Structures are given as C-alpha cells and as structure tokens.
Length: 148
Length: 148
Length: 148
Length: 148
Image (cartoon, rainbow over all chains, first blue to last red; front, side, top):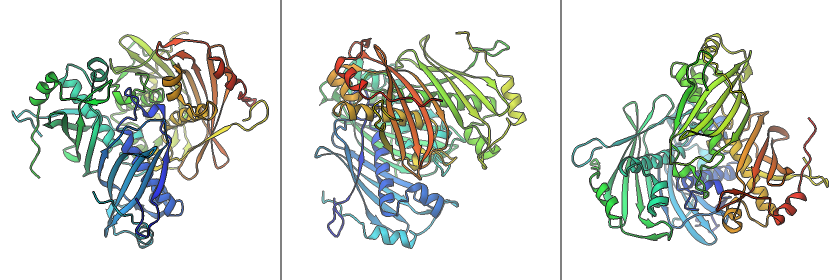
C-alpha cells in the first residue's frame, strides 16, 4: 500500500497483548475493528499536526462519524509479533472519506478493511463538506488500492 | 427480520452505558461490532442449549472464527434506550455461516451488519463442515433478509 | 450484602462471554473493574428513576468521578454462569460516596471491591456536596459491610 | 520512582484516544486499570526477553493471576498528551509479586496503583514459588515506593 506519489503508507504499531486474546489463543475478533479505528485516528494525528478525533471535535468542531465498515480477516493475530497497521485514505468525496487499513504481522496480512466516514459540524451533528485545510492534507495522502 | 416460518428474529438486549460513549455523547463506533458479536454469541446460547462460543470451543471442539464483517451505521446509539439487537443466520453453507444483526433503539434502526464465520475443528484450527446437530439447529432458524 | 433495613442488595447481572476471556479460559482481570463500574451505573439507573451516569451528567449536571478503587479477586470468572454483581453504597459523606460491589457466580464469591466517588458540578468539574434529592435516595439504600 | 540501584523505573507509553474518553471528555475510569495491566505486561516483556503474559503462560507454563488491585485517581487523563506509565515491582514474596504503576501526563501524576499477583503452574492453576530465573530478574528490578 502506497500513496500515489509512491511513498509507503503510514504505519501504526499495535502491541497485541494477553488480554486481547480469547481462549483460542488469538486476538478476539471484536478487537480488530477497534485497532483499525485506532490506526485511522493515529493517521489523523500524524497528518493533521497532532490532531486526532479528540482535537478535531473539540478544537476544530469537525466530526467524522463512520457510516460503513467492512473487514476481511485473513490470518490469526497473536501477541508474538507487533501488529503493523498500514492505513491511508483511498477516496475523498465532497463530504465523505474512505480509509483502507491493512493489518500485518511478521510479513503476513492478517486483515484488511474499508471504512467510510462523513464530515459533520461536530456541535450541530450536521453534514458539511470536507474543510479545505483538511481536504488539502488528505488529497496529498491518497493511497492506491491494490487491484484484486 | 423474521425466520422463514414467520417467527420474529431472536433479540439480544444491550444496556448502553456512559463508558460506551465518546465525547460526542454517542456510543463509540468500535463498540458496535463488539455488541454485534455479543448478539451472535447470545444467539448460539439461546439455540444450542446454553452453549455459546466458549462451550462450543471447550466442550464440543467446534470453533467458528470470523472471516468477514460488514456494517452500516444508520443512527447514533445512546444510553437513553436499551439497544435491541435482532439476530439470525441468513445462510448456511457447507462449512460457513452468515449472520445478520440489526441494532434498534426506540423504534429506529441504528445499524445493520453481515457476519461470515467458518466452522473449524477447534483444537486443530482446521476447516470442517458444519456438524450435523448444529446444522439442524441453524436450518430451522434461517431468517429472511429484507429486500433492499 | 443487605441494606440496613434488611432488604437484599441490588443485583446486576452480567453475561460473561468468550471475548471476555483470555487464553487461561477465564475472564481477563481488566474486565472485572469494568463490570463493577457497570454494576454501579446500573445501581444509579435503578434508584434514580432510570438515570445512570449519562443522564446524571447531561440532564442533572452532576458528575461522580472515581477517586479510588480497590478490588480483591477470589475466584476465576467464566462464561459458564451469569455473573451476579451485588452492589450498594456503604457510606455517604458530604461530597463523596463509597460503593461496595461483590461478584458472584454459582454461589461462589469471585471478587469484591470498594469504590469511592466524589460529587462534582459536571460542566465545571468542581466539587459539590451531594445534591439533596440524590442524598435522600442514597441514604435509604446504604448497605452494611460484612465484618471481616 | 526508581530501582534500588537508582535507575529510573521502566516506562510504558499509552496513546490515549477519542474512544477511550467518555462524554466528560476524559478517559473513562474503567480504561485506567486496563492500561495499568498493559504496563505490567510490557514490564514483563521488557525484562523477560520479550515474554509477556502470553509467552509466560504458553511457553513457560507460568501464570501470574491478580489477587488484588488498588488505585487512586489523582487527575483526569485526556488524549492531549501521551500517558506515561512508570512501572516496577515493589515486593517479591515467595509466591507473590507486587507491582506499582504510576500514570503521568505532561508532568502531572494522574493515577497510582498497587497490584498483587501470585505465581501459578499455568496448566494446573496451582500456586507455585516464583521460578528461580524469574526471581533473579525481578530482584534486580525492585523499585522503591515513595514515602507517603
């Protein structure tokens, strides 16, 4: 996964732990979308001057609630390796943004997912177009989706 | 959502709490697939003589790991009402099962999702066909998916 | 655990699930304070006309942040039984409240804990005495702590 | 917090996120013991050749279940700073170990806690003395508890 200009996608590292695992000795499925969201939040922090969803909401009055998520689970996740989440935006619409997140452990792809958010005025919970400064940041970071 | 014989789908009730909500005063998105999985586990308990995933794995040596999930989020979820999760299997393949989960609060649909699991021999983490007794239970409970 | 007038303490039921368990096949420790807090929130809902922390904060402008918790873990918790959390206030100070929570499964005490909260004006995050209507409710529900 | 030989205690960094916060815009209380446990697990990983609870259980057949935890919450935790968890063992008994965890944000102590675990033979869930190799590692890392 890389940006259109050829840079590797942003990576967010997760320390998978004992408490994330179920009696099958692998990460419980419901932890995985949680980590994918952590990765998207970390992407915002890295590209918006340190601002994640918390600062976007409270300081910029911009919310980005999710309207859709879809995940494929390809291999079990365990605490034996760090989980590397590669993340980037794949599409920026007028008032929506789509992210792709891939989870990798030890060179194996464990999951991949697609996540669609819409931009809202946070204190009014009303749709809005992507704010121009955010749009500029996102457009430079669009990643290419691998052909299936 | 109802079974092919016209009975209403199984309902699992979730008590949404303060700690489930984020600063936007609504349930955090990552809680929602977690609740959907709780609802599927409760469905198994209700239809398999009290056995959820824990007993299926430890007592029956049957695992049902997820290979896919897809959710659409339609309305915010808050602690002001119980969250009613309607759940049922929509398709039983040779070695896979698909569940539909809908979340409702106060008459409004908040989310819906589709979840695909595969049957495995738990201690070998190896695919297997759906065991006959489980197949019989599931087939009687297949729900009809609403036409879109 | 019972109130001073001899009624049994309030009970909150938890459905322990596969995803709550770690590879030791018992509930992960960090889930237990979470359930204890769920039980305290449910106690407020049951005694304050349906209002838990969410409604206390948003509708009454009353917050009750925790300043202390202490738990003893006595027996493992599994999905094989519902977890019954017995909960009640043991002490109401001028501006603080102490709760006791006991977790039971199948007649065995699994944990017990003590939790101290302080009353604040929610939107100012400033201490306040317990509001009179809440004080009246709590005083009638004080439970006796078993002698050790 | 420092070891008896004067080295600073081990630090585990937590990225506090939007989803960790409740509608009061601060981390939900039940997240805090969870992070403290993450910090203890990270301490084991750092001092036991990369082995956390997962590897201790599965590869060494050593479990360390918790029998007690006690926490004081001193200041709210938010996503505006990383949460630095200082962690170290304060006491090693024959078959038990006590950890102290302090959480700091931007130079302010947010919480402190004490956690007692016992050593068990993992597959038998039976108490055992601390294994000698683990005892040697722990003894060199004992931290001094600040006088109150």
